[in-house]
Length: 440
Image (tube, rainbow, N blue to C red; front, top):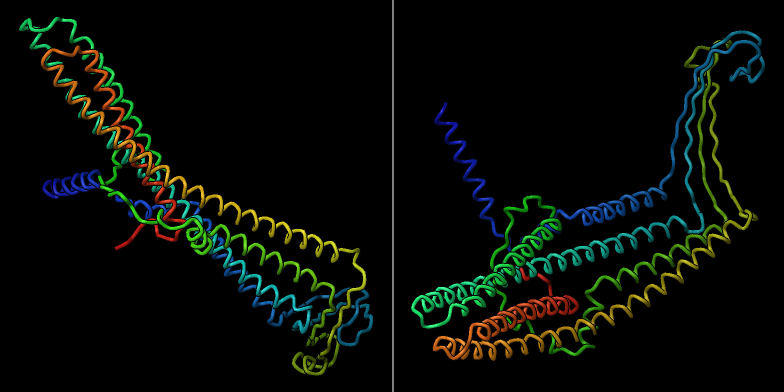
């Protein structure tokens, strides 16, 4: 028994360690978010509701069928259901019936309603796809933020190691009497400042992980981590396309305009459905009924066959005046259609503006990244020169610390512009119809 417990404990500990060693890739994060995001689940329910609405619309073409039965004990003056005469005595009676109706014509409202359910399902599909796209972009942004904070932390720690080495070297020189004791103070101040930056970046890294965990609905913040992916630059040649070409692709792939177009189609169909109320309605019906009463001389079965009856016919309803209710519904539907058309126009303008903005953002982000790289190269040369002068005593610790800080800032700016360029390019690729995650 003890050995079994030990084995189970080891298995449990091994599972926990495996969970802690889990490194999430960007593809895994996006897939997990899409499968578990609450908003996406709600949108999927809307899609299921569309199927139910379609089923109900199809049911509108089918006949209705209802049946009823009644058994009663009558006292006092009551109408005998068989003789249809008053009887002032106690008697038992039974009646049953079945009725069926089918709409032959109602201004084609049933057909138009069925068409509307199909349009609504298409619109809900677009909304679901848009929500998945938005979630994927949000996850990608959070993921890249974590990568940036990780690289930033590595740079800061490496720079701090260099500072600590210089402190040790300077301390040795002070003890040897080669440099004055005051030369170490600036290095100590730089070390303290770097330690503060490391703590701040560690906190930013934790916050960025928590943000991604919340998007993924993962509660294990402490053990969550992502894989250390390397994203090569340049990402793609989308920025080499013309803005007009990207806009044309965006109209085919981005769901915002498609959703707006679907809303216009739905609004037009609502106008058509509301106008159906102006037309007459023709309904066919058939009914059957039978009855029994104990006060008649026939037995139960004989009465059911003797006193039954059927009704078959047509019913025509012609709308003449209903307090202008139909006219009001038609006018409101027309206003909704006009509003949907304005929203479509606005969606097209927004898409055009967003595409042009995304295009220019990529161009500017690439220029900023290239400038940051050039600045870093210059800062490295300046730092190496300052280091050589400092090591031979031609540069004081203050000026050397300033050169170190300048190098740190240049490295940080390269990282910032790099990940900004990556994310901006991802957005432009999205508008061009390139999937965020290129699955193998």
